[in-house]
Each structure stands twice: as structure tokens, then as C-alpha cells.
Image (cartoon, rainbow, N blue to C red; front, side, top):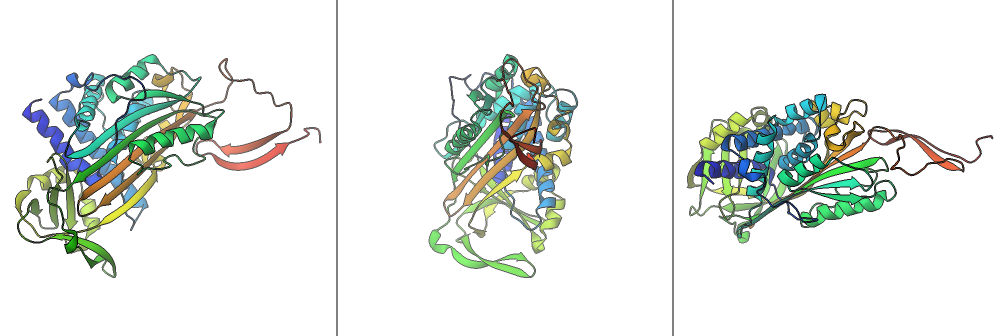
Length: 425
């Protein structure tokens, strides 16, 4: 790998991963295409375009989430969401594909996009003795529902994702438990119950999943004996007590920058490939920082970093966040994928029978004196646009008492529920 190529990958790890604290575990459900099959076609420009696309999406999603969640902690893995939706995009066509490509800024050229994603995927999953960082992708398909071989080959070759058969129609709850167990196992038990009960039903035909798990140790660890309870200013009128970690002996150096309105600190993890970048607004003016947080500004602040001794105070924190992303993604510009009458994912199964019902994302982060543990998982749940019978479906004959539900199909909201015991009554 060229030094330029290596630098780009390291830059991705140092800027994107720290902010969102990525992680995951690779596992093959069945013998799979080895990492690197799509890797050789990755170019420096292609990798840069995908890294930039992920960053742009990360910031756009952040802006959208904060508008809905004023005053709340935010934490998510843009890469997890990016990869899950990139796999979905591989099967999108027409307007549906155009909208997904637009909000994720995906390279339109298939070779560039796929080989670059494979290169990044492979690079991030390299085994390290210094930290744990692993990523996994998988498809979960209704056992009698056929996907196109071409689509399966793309997912296997460039995303190292394997296809697994489950029974959403007759054993919905069991299928949900199988998927959730897979996610839990690959996130070191940090992401549990990714798909809550009620999000899958007999119309579900495909679930695409991504997991990311990270566990890293600080190069400059904090001394736990120095951690003290201190006030944390939530706002001008509110403070809370937190466990504040500190390094104040002047012996440790950090990459640091001080701008007119912002302090920037980079904290390295063992191995030097990953770091956490902390953006601290002056005068407790977080909204102003958020309003100016762009890819260009991020690169500018990063270029201003210089190594120097710094007295560091950082609170310990630990929390999990869950997001149903449909409303955000529709608002950002991809409504067609969620519309049963408009969605076109014919590149997945050769029909226009599929639409996205929901995109579920869950993320955990824990920061302490030793380092950081973080995990993220994303599930794209795809359902049928209609229930027209075909030769592969069982016969449905309502010739005996039955219960019925009238629901809003996209969300699964129950509008009416009843039962028919005697139609002639």
C-alpha cells in the first residue's frame, strides 16, 4: 500500500472513527469470499471519495438528529448506517437509487464505489494487537424468497456479507431472535435487542445488518486516583456532578489546537491508528459550533493541530442511544425507498415487490481512564409491497373463524382489530 493510500485510511480512522467511536466484529456464517477480492481495484481517489461521502453523511445526519433531540446526548455510527444503506443501494434502481446516492454522496461508478468500500472495509478490519476494531455485514432472507445471484455476489465480494435464511412468515419471533443474537455476539453483548418486538412480521422478506465494535486503550492513560467529582455545566443555569478524569503533570503531549471559538484535542489510542477528536466550544456555545460543523471546517481544524503538553480534563461517560432513521432519511431526501408504491429495489430480487419499512440503529459508548469501548449496529428491514399469492407461498383459505387487523403497512400501526366467527350473523 502506498504511503499516500495509508495516510488516507489513517486519516479516516483518526477523524471519523473517534467522533463516532466505531467498532464491530467480522464473522463468516459460511465460507465467504476472503477480504481483498474487491480490494485490488481500490484507488486513492476512490477511497477518498467514499471517506468524504461518509463524513458528509455523518454531519448531515447529525444536523438532522439534533433538530429533533434538543438537549439530549447523541451518539451513532455513521459508518454502520452508511454500509447498511450502501448494500441496499446496490439493489436500488431509478428514482430510488438516485435519492439514496444523493444523500449518501455515493460514487455512481460501480467499480469505484465497490472497490473503494472493499478497500476501506478490509483496512479497518486488519488484526491489531493494540486495539479491537471489527466490522460485519449479513443478509437475512425469507427462506423461500429468491434474491438475484448477481446481487448476492456483490454483497459477498465487496462487503463480505453472507446470506442467511430465516422464516419471517411462519416463525417471525424466532427470526428476530436469531438476528438479534448475531448482532449481540458481534458487538461483545453491547448492542442487545437491536430489532425490538413488532418490527418484523410475516411480510418481511429481507433484513440487512451491519455491526461495528471498537475497544481501544489510550496512549496517555488517566490515573484513576486523580479522577474527582466536579461540576459539569449543562447550560448557563444548570450544572451536574460528574467524575472528571485529568492529566495535569505536563509530561504528556497531545495534538491540540486553539481557535477563536474552539479548542480541539486529539487523544490517541494504542497503535496510533485510531484516536478521539474532541471539539470543545468556548463560552459553552455548542449551537454555534454545530452550525459551523462542516467537512471543510473539520479538515481546517485538523490541520491546525500541533503536538504539545496539555492539561486534560474529560468526564467519564457511558450511554446507549437508539434511532429509528426512517423519518430522518426521508427528510434528508430519500422518501421513495420507504414508499410501497414507488420503491424500486429490482436489483435485489428482479421485481418491484420490496420497500424499506424501517432503518434501525443502536449505538453504545463508554469512556473511562483506560480507554474507550463503543459499538454500533444497523438493520434495514425490507417488506413486500403486496401480498399477492405465488407458487412459492402457502395457500390461504379463510374458511373458518379468524382474527383480522387493519393496519398502516409502512409503520405497522394497528388501526382496527377484530375477529370473524360467523360471516352470516
